[in-house]
Amino acid sequence: MDILQDFKNVLAKLLDEVKTALAGVRTNRPNTGLVEDLKVSHYGGTFPVKQLGSVGVMPPREIRIEVWDASAVPAVAKAIETSALGLTANTEGNVIRIFLPELSDERRKELTKYIGTVAEEHRIKVRHARDEANKRVQKAFDGGELTEDQKFRTKEDIQKATDGWNEAVDALVEKKEEEIRA
Image (cartoon, rainbow, N blue to C red):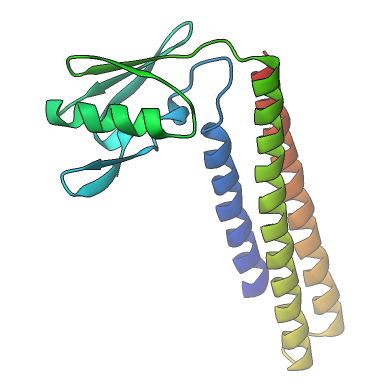
C-alpha cells in the first residue's frame, strides 16, 4: 500500500538524519564524521570539507585533512575553528591537523544530553509522520478505498514500523553514549 511505503520512506530518511547528526558528535576516539560535513565558504560557494580535501584519522587523537587547493586551507581552518566543536586547527602547508583533547566528565555529560535531544527531536518528527499516515489511512477508509480489516492492518503495520524505528534509534544512541564514555 502506498501509505505504508511512503511512511517507511519517511522513517528511512529520518533515520539517516539521526545517523548523520550522531556522526558529528565528538567521542574520545577521532572520527572523520566530526569535520567532513562542516560547511566551508570558498570561491563564493559553500562546500563540505570532504569536497575540498581528504579527511583521515591519525591514532590516537588526531584528525588530518589534506586540502587539495592551497588557497582553501585558511577557509577550511576557519570553518573548523568557528564550528560548535571547539576544536583548533593546526596548518602545515596543505595539511590541517586537529588534535582532540581528552573529554572532561562535564563535556561527556553535555554530549550525552545533546544526543538525547537529537533523538527526541527526531522521535517527535516520527510521531507527526505516523499521525499523518494514520489520517491518510482513515481518509482512504472513509472514501471506501479500504475495508475495515485493511484499515486496522495498515495502522498496525504503521505502528510496527514506528516501533522498529524507535528501537534502531535507541541502539544508535546507546552505541554513541558508549563511545563517549570510552
